[in-house]
Length: 163
Image 1 (cartoon, helix red, strand yellow):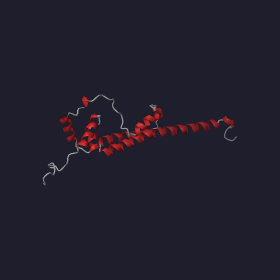
Image 2 (cartoon, helix red, strand yellow):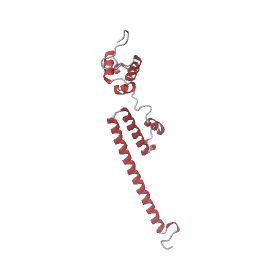
Image 3 (tube, rainbow, N blue to C red):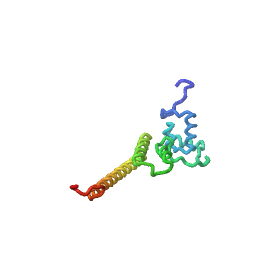
Image 4 (cartoon, helix red, strand yellow):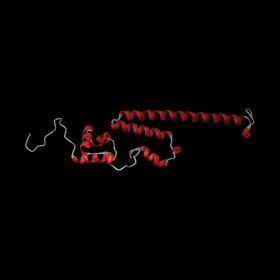
């Protein structure tokens, strides 16, 4: 190794620069989970935990802020804002779509357990939507039968089948 060249660690990996660790620290102390910080910034979980312990990154020392319920880019945020809390305005297909998107986002993050949870939610919502569609179609068919029977029995100027 030439003089002045930095020594590389035994495992062949170079540590992340200080700027990256500063951002990891900021995100971690802001309440983002350690695995999510690692995913975002490309650092190892063990390295993050060691650094947090040695440098005293304690969330308990941070001022309390209410947790953000959803990621700002989550489709559910926009839907919740659009309906302003009135859940009766939400269509079942919109919930299916959101569950599907969250499942895909979990897959991209490599979080298989969360992806499977959202897949089950998606499947339940899809089955529920099919059942609602079936009930609506049955009700519409019954309404047509009632209307026909009503017309055949002399209402609306019709006096019966040979009139």
